Length: 427
Image (cartoon, rainbow, N blue to C red):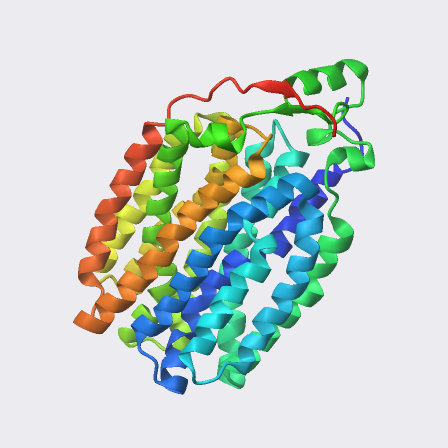
């Protein structure tokens, strides 16, 4: 028998939507909104500016696995609260950027360093703790905040740039993080259902249900029982490296477009407002991708679902290489956004199903680092290609072809394993 009240986990989901919409991933993806402004204000080349995105990615690669370890050891909130607070001030301080390119690069180190606790890693860990049978749906809805933020943040930024300057735009974003995301993280989020005397998915507290949940994947009553592989065990498995490779390729291809879409559209004669309007299709499709992928992964074998979604970028990137504009560009952007939306859900879903929750944070951190490895290289390659050739055509074709390899890697992962269940001695 279900409780009559709304399960508190769905309030967690709502909080995740808002929090992650102003988190590190969204702000990093909105970097392209400011490329033209930096070119005009400081005279930097597109390759120089794109290297900032590479620095963000490299810092994330080095730091995020450690953040995952901290989350596993101390819990989500102890990492998320200070990170959200510091991240807000870091973004606002971008308004003080000087003409030194090294100032930009220093800030590109601080953004992922201080904002790591606002990335999908922490939000995914929270959602996985609150949901089991409805995990895919909860991840799909909660992490849809990336799509919401990808739609709204560039619009907010472009509006402030239009009315004031890009400096005020950064201040506005920092204030939004502090006033909206931080209160939710601090006062709304609860670490796990047992903190409120609840169980995952809002199931009844009946003795038989408690035992069933405990046997399946619930360790609320015995906190020393851990289900899943250790990080060291995961790294020895072929499945992990196939997953990792698919994340690297997806980051390489999709994040490249995220950074360069706005300037690419402006190169074709669109105004900043019009280019950001195209970018908004990306955000909306990310939301759709998250919701649809989350629902389908609960119903069907996840790798099959993911491969269907990943063919979107294959088509979209090829169309952009052929010069897609107008409605065609919007459609291509949507195809790529649906895949991006699915990808962040996939990271959490694959990690939990193939490796369990025992070392979820650190394994997810490794997987996310793979995504960021690709995301750090792609925009730089595209920026340099533009500086050399004055166009993006060749690199878009190459990335379209590369996405096919990611699909093959996912299909080779195989069925979900039987996760080990071990009792951990108290210390």
